[in-house]
Image 1 (cartoon, rainbow, N blue to C red):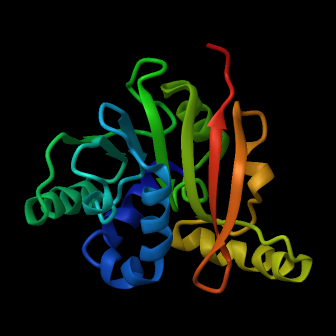
Image 2: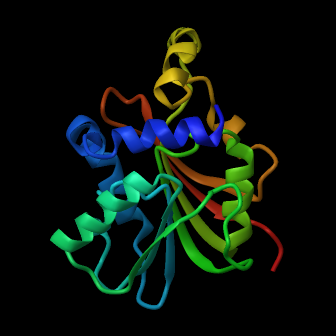
Length: 207
């Protein structure tokens, strides 16, 4: 799916996204931010910040930059910051496949429900590896292909439908990280139903 179509889909979701998906996906987001454990002085990038629903979950000392391609989502994220102010937070409209940051700009990154909702997940992961410092961390939260073959078969069958809604169900953890410098250090299943994954990766690119 191209950017223009995805932009229209997620602009349309923007006002209702939190009501549709907020509670369902809240716990994995909360666990990811807690596991990220941003330290004072660290710079954090949230790729696909969406409506900003995770921003109040970060510690107040964290420097957080949130990027998203959807202008509608970013308007909601700005409103979220108005309701729950936090210092040292910046929101930018940006294509995650071509981010306007220098190499090694961030100590830690989070991407929640992003890699299956972009035109090319490998370009997004490569960009995240580029802007993440050597040894930095990436926390991924996503619905990915289940390791149970029967469930995975059902996910592949659903993929043509879910693509029309703005995401894929046929990508595995190995598919997403293939060819990148990110190495998984932990993989946990998440609610609801254990169909979501929380994956912590280390950026093993050379210093």
